[in-house]
Length: 74
Image (tube, rainbow, N blue to C red; front, side, top):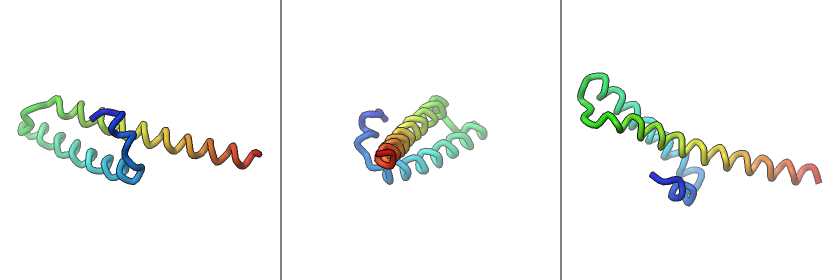
């Protein structure tokens, strides 16, 4: 999952995607604990995908907050 593709999505869609990725990560962790996960690299990939989504959500929150504070100061 590329950050460029994620930036094109809406904020609501990103929040929904984050929940889905967190559920997948939990599933991967449980499978890994019971030795049913064949590809352990999925754990790291899932964590990185969640971090990418969280970063974009944080960027959008800070940019909208700074835009609204600039308008309030003028």
